[in-house]
Structure formats: C-alpha cells, structure tokens
Length: 370
Image (cartoon, rainbow, N blue to C red):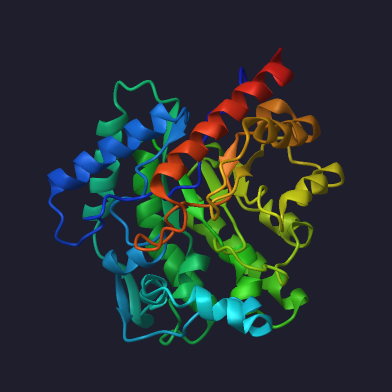
C-alpha cells in the first residue's frame, strides 16, 4: 500500500455513482468492463490517486455476498438507526424513499455458509486491472465485506452462536480476500459494524459488551486475512452513511484501541461530518502504531455541499501534524452510493467533491512538504 512519502495521496471509500443500468444480474461482461473503465477514468480526472472499480457490479457493499455465498434465504431482521426512536418524524422522511427500504431488505443465514466459486471476484479483479493498466494510477484497491458487517446485516438463523457464524463467514470470505491479494491489488475490508453496530443494532446491549463484540469481529478479520501482509490491506469503519442526528454514535476514542488491533495497515474512517470531525484530536492522546496509517474522511459523503479546498487542506494538516505526513492519505467519510439505488449526493456533485479533495491535498502538500 502506497503512503504519502512525497505528497499527500488521495483516495476514497469505495462506492461511486453507478450507470443507471448497473448493477444488474443480467449485465453483460462487456457492459461491466466498460463501466469500470469509465469510473476509473472519472476518478483519475478528478485527481484521485488510489482508485477502484466504484463497486459498479455490486448492489451494495454488503448484500452482494448473497450472490457469492451459499447459505442465505428468507428474510432477516430489519435494521434502523436508534436515532429514529428519538426523532420519528425525521425517520419517517428518511424511510419514505422506497429505494432505501428495498436496499435494507436482507435475507438471513439459514444454511451452512459456503463460498460458491470465484467467478464474480475474478471478474471484478480482471475489470479493474484492465481499466487501470497504463493509466498512471498510483494504486488500485478492491473492497470486500468483512465477516462482521455481513453478520450485522444478514441475520444468523442457522448457527448455534454468533461466534460460530462469524467463524464460518471468516472461513468463507477468506477465499475472496486471498484472490484480491494474489492479483496484486490492495484489499479494503469494509467494517462499518465496528462503529455502526452500536447505534444501529446495539450489539452486546451495553458499551462494555459492545467492545467485546468489536474484539470478536477484529479477531475474525485477523483470522480471515492471516495469509495477507498487513501493508497490502486497509480497513474502513463508519457510523452509518446517512444524513441524520447520529447523536447515539459511539465515540471513536472508545473503539480505537480494539480497531488498531486489526491486521490491516491503514484505517479509513469518518472525519468530515459534523458529528465526528472533532475526533481528530483523539490522536493527541492515542499513539498511532508505527506500522499503521490513517485515511481520514476529509470530505462528507452524504451532503451536496462541495467542500472548499482550503477546508480540506486544514483537515489533512491536522492529522499529519499529529501522526506524520507520510501516514495520512486524504479520503472520504464513506461511499457515495452505499446502496446502488440510493444516491443522496448528485452524481455530478460527487465528482466535484472529489475534485475539491484533490485540490485540498495539493494545498496540504505545499504546507507539509514545502
């Protein structure tokens, strides 16, 4: 994984606006390949250094696994942020969007989890490598759902315990993780459950028990990635990619020690939205391990404001002055199309925001590198 050794590198969290006809189970291989080429080109034109496939083949960052894993069926529990309990009128407006309701409908685990075959991930790998070949992209990554986030969204109705369910998911998803690594791409593990699990599902019931749940999920990550060098992986966590109160979110400080025990060398997290921007100061007290890097969100992924490049630069410099300029990549709070059909930020504005990210990184580079 590239670091900001000579300048501040830019990247993002993963999902980007898809063409209107994607993803679709019947999409031709040629159409998918064409879409990946287009989304890579758009990232590079916006000034993004570390690019991906925009997740154009996936209906969402987590439910896509039901197309690759056997063992799911029926209907699982619905998920909703606890914000809704305190602000029901706001929740009514949020869930008035039928595309979001449909996206949140998930099956449950009803049989043993088995990874069917690598056809889909091999296709994603081939499309991204072909799209980036000869473009001058600094690096490329592919995202994959972590065992913990799958367990959060796809309820366990088969295994005797959640620990057994997580272990089965880790064993199965190892196939996908290893394939991405063998292809020479950086693996991004999507792990919103490490933070969002408290607000959305209240895993464990108490904060003390929730931290034990986080530790259990980190253990599953470490087991599933045991054959991949840490420097070839990054981890993304978030508190739920929606514009809402977020007043029940757990603080970064409370989960950070456990998160830093995960094997991936870089941690991507929300650092731009009004609820979590202040948490950069956590790193005044928490020492970042030498082998770790940060990918803080310096642009928000839920609003149509285009951040001023000066603000982006200020956010980058804050982190760099605390943990070292080489240990900071400029990122986004989360994806811009977490669910393919639910796109709160206008697609054209998304690309303008990524352009502001690049401009802000250039300003930060001048201040940090001279």
